[in-house]
Length: 204
Image 1: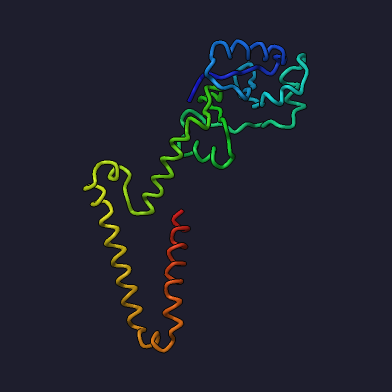
Image 2: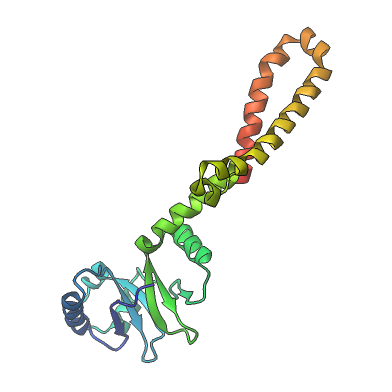
């Protein structure tokens, strides 16, 4: 979470916001600013406005007037609390295709913000862990050493081998039927491949 952000109270005019933006850019030259957080006198979040939308209004109009007229803003912006688990934050970014997410404290006051770049690495790590779990591997073991990776995977390889042996035994029970209907032997690899695909989709 980052606390550097540009906010404006609902009573402030667009001209005042532009002046605050100039000061903010001078003080924080490396901090990207593309959305404005509108708050009330108690720092409760009211709306999130994009600066490209603000250019459609006159300098004398207040943030409240702009919120009343604007069609592209959240009347109740999506936000998280400082105690929200990171898994929930990642889920919100993915579900709503967010670029920025405000963070509130226990009094529902604006505390900071999270941008997509802040959690991009966490999303990649989560996807990697899911892929390893699907393969029966462990991320910590994979990174520790070759021996630990071998031990982590060996158990699942034996389980898969046992399942395949059982499947082969069942097929052998119907050997005479397969000999009479050769088409069944042709279809068996297709059924096995479809079963594997369905398993992967279910695991996702």
